[in-house]
Length: 331
Image (tube, rainbow, N blue to C red; front, side):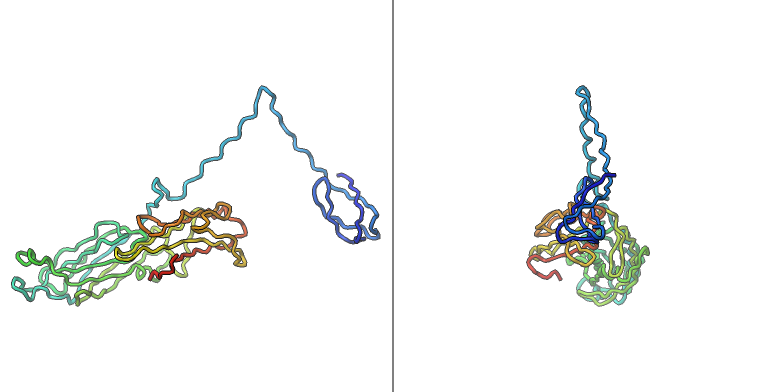
């Protein structure tokens, strides 16, 4: 310990607390009772031990510090920066009811429709679509055929088309007649999904264009990619990416969407923002891939990499914000 003399400053007296600069740094001390400004008292402070130093002899130079280890890859990354993750779909085309009779009129068409169903090859569905066998002479065909697919985040709906198989001259002149189309949104499959349980659907779809009739399908999804639905929590690893991708029909003009991350403290005050205007934030814990103004190409159009373990301790929440830059609606 070391004794340090302290003089009571003007305006202070016994009982006041002073902050004093000592050899060990700033310390708080209480002025003894009865002392007045200008009087002196002593305080004891700990003495910091000097750390021993080592100087290498001239003939033995100090070794250079080891280079920092290379950054670890993000989970799931490969050479192209994409994630080879897919959900699995088991789809059964069960039957149809009251389909249109396309063989009841025409010079070469006499009889009853010979229906088959095609699963349309849509964006996000991994595979070449599927086609059932043809059921001869039936307006209530039963197939009970099961198909297996994989799909990614770009799949928005499943689409089906029913045709009447024509043979001979009728087929060569007009092709197979269309009996109707049906569609089911993926959102309907996800509605009411429970954590760690297969997602199933058993439904009848109305046939349109031209119709009439109904198509009976069954679907089962095994979610390898965690799916976030309202009220459902999805566990995340310490390091992860958030991807934003968008596609539009050929006749639609390009739309500029932007993804941003807003960090909030416990009182929901904004701590930092990462966006196309500021690509790095939170002391490097959050990194934006950059602005994409059209959504063209495959994979994520914009992505944000997050290292949750490196976030400042004051950050309690991360809010994901998606904006339409030109304020055009996306619905």
